[in-house]
Image (spheres, rainbow, N blue to C red):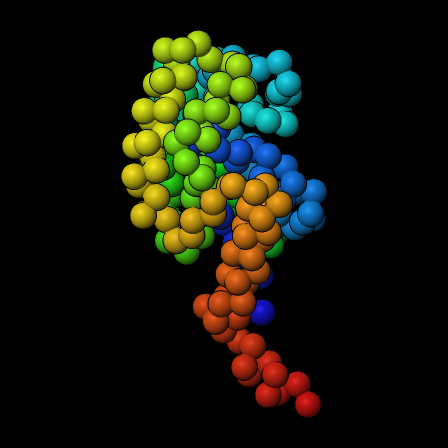
Length: 204
């Protein structure tokens, strides 16, 4: 292999489309894939654990991280900050670990400028109706918040053309398989295996 660095994978999709579930199974199936832990100022949900799902911090702490240049990307959504600490991502890539950044389309745009070789994947719901049903079944938002999320989701879906790959989450097992297929294909690209020809010829 010419480049032992890990692959950076940008993973986006509207709220409620199943990103967390796909990534949970992906991590269970693949020892070399790690999901970067994002930082947020929103409240912890009942099933979430600080340091596992997010780093839950105060707004003051988050703003200081921005000022110190320690955030790879960040954005505001529904009056809360979300972002990715930079140092852990770079360290894992140097160690040859494939890193997934679960971020919104705004963050994805920023990452593409910093890491031009990043692989970008958009997780698509099968329909807006299916997405609405998933959000309602989650039961974590009031009606006004839910309708706002659906509005934002439509705007995000319209930007799916900015991504290299689109995975439709109509069937969970198939969505995970499709994601894994993307990663396998990327690892076989010539740009990531430039020395393989000479290595094969000289390995006599």
